[in-house]
Length: 153
Ligand SMILES: O=P(O)(O)OP(=O)(O)OP(=O)(O)OC[C@H]1O[C@@H](n2cnc3c(O)ncnc32)[C@H](O)[C@@H]1O
Image 1 (spheres, rainbow, N blue to C red):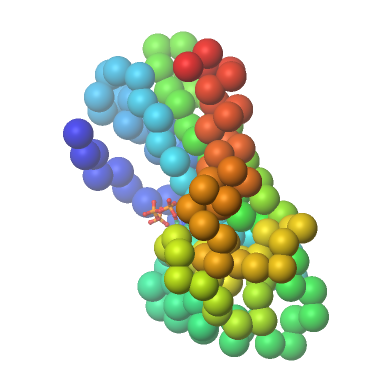
Image 2: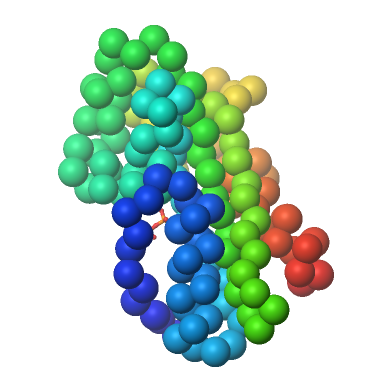
């Protein structure tokens, strides 16, 4: 079932996931799980964070790379927060991958910011890795592993 929830103007994916989960539970009155993901650029004090889809919709990956010109520190994190809510309350499980913004777009796998994010320990973007390679190290995998073990799924 699909549920349209309001978007929160908030940088922190953890807070967005927590509010989304609570709101979805209030609506559906049954256990819910939501996902919110973001791109956290260190030199920009965390921008765009959870607002990344606004950046991608307006300037795209290429625009984002251009906006990084003049910022020598290209380090960034990709973060997924999984929010879970049931009668007992809300819990959030966060997965993070440290890396950096690529000098140019590369690769055609994946979606979103995959072509411009190079995970630490690699010299290729997420979009140059196979689906299996990305899934093995992704922020979403890390968040889901935490959720699985905490919720005993
Ligand atoms: O809340 P908004 O910002 O409207 O977006 P959304 O709910 O539709 O989507 P997400 O939080 O899951 O993701 C925010 C943006 O991050 C991108 N994104 C999410 N997961 C990603 C991944 O694994 N690799 C690359 N980009 C990703 C996605 O394309 C969106 O533009």
